[in-house]
Length: 379
Image 1 (cartoon, rainbow, N blue to C red):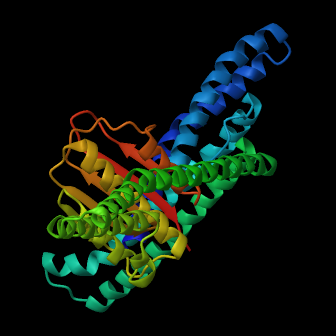
Image 2: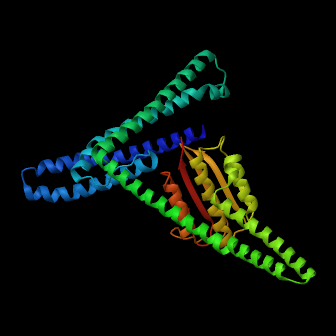
Image 3: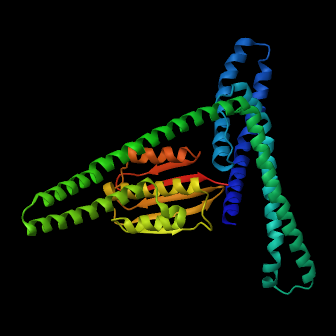
């Protein structure tokens, strides 16, 4: 319900801004048409008029492209011609006026739909049944208006794609480029993981096992029973430490608790193992599919590890929630900020998210706080 309300508010804002731009588009289209009509038979004058007309058309078209992207979730290509931009504006202003009409109708419906609540407070009501019927009619009008708002938004998207693109071929080319880049990123991420695992085994577990072998060898060669027992005790401690480090490496490769108990339990384990207090806000009603859960886990794990190492934070907040067709993962710390998004840790997280066609953002001003957000698409 919250997602629907948020989407409706964003759509309404987009239509209101579209109505505002239509107030500039209609005079622009009329004046541009008259100016070009006056110099139609004069090539030099036509070229002189076309330059400012094209510049104005591009400015208005870019404003509409930003509005469509930010509020109506419609992506368009920037490779359009001046002619297509002017053709787009010559039709777009009518949708802006239609949006004004639809939103005005929605306000009237909302007023009538809620009138039965306020009218009795203003005085005696002789025909309360009429008030109730008008309220029902107002709510029905509000419902129709909201459906009309979604319809206007759909027409806006179709008109923009028709005149500004991207074309079907451009979409396919962009998709191929994205898949090639994400595939290369996945391969690089896998290679980085292999190198990290090899380094952890070589520098940690292997050194422990070498030390364990040396202690056992010295114990076997020792002629002093008391010294041999001391060396065996040290070997026993060394074996325990080697086993603990091996478990740590295995946990970083893939936590079995993710399969056995789910994403929430895995994230709670990350919070418990952190040297800095971690507050976990887990708002998913059910665990996402395995690939999404795995990426969400590793994003949180890497972000918490980076914060512990570099941020000098006192608290890390992890929030996992459901968005529109996506799992939202947000990690925030109150540390020093200034995180480099191109660093190996953050870059590795970005590649994991990109492999799922997700979005990854880092906001880390100097002085903090640092906020890492990942949007992971899911069914």
